[in-house]
Image (cartoon, rainbow, N blue to C red; front, side, top):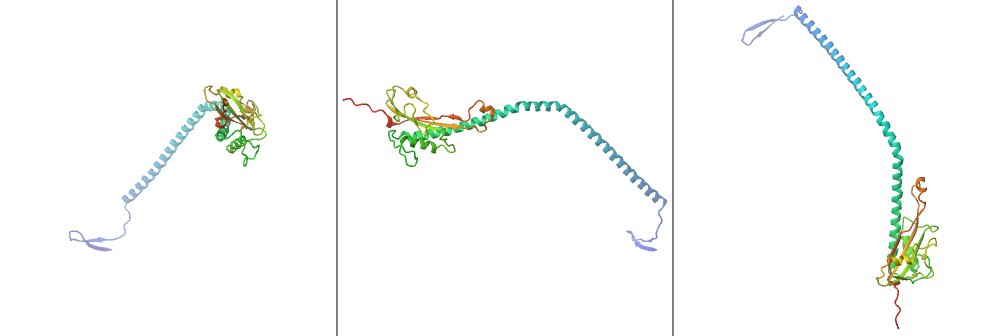
Length: 266
């Protein structure tokens, strides 16, 4: 098959197109290329084997290091567990003590605030005003009104009528001496809401708190007896601290209506 064409110089060139058999050089070049590919593949396989061997060695080295670390850390871990076993009960006791003391302090302050609010009301009242009623909604009794205000200001705490109590006393002081204690007829016991307790103060103790140079005055004493129950009630606490524990917050404030009246000289 013949084909003609024109090259760049304008010369007509004749081409003969026919199927040629590969020469021996081409065959040798093809075989050489095939051999190079095989060698490259074998080299790659060898490199992979080398890499695999290297990774195995590194993994083995890491396992040995970890094993040594575990062996070295084993005595320390045992020591830590022993220390924890010794100190954990002590820490739990301290934590339980903090909880119990915190609740006791909270309840004490709650009852103390209630006694203060009631005593402030008593400052402007008349200790001689009595009606004997126990109904907080209708009574005009001086002592009963103070007791009702104590209970109204105590929530969420409540008084147990079988154990707790509110004791109220009014003192008339003149020339540094307690002239009388109200209400009359209760003596050193004071007025009691539920009849479970008596006053923790004597007239002599109140007198010792007053300066002898002070002018005549009157004071109201509000004492609240409240039974505090332990929150956790653990045996190592109840063995030493009573449960319930009776606390007695109190408040003393002046009452002008209770001031002793000087006897007129004829």
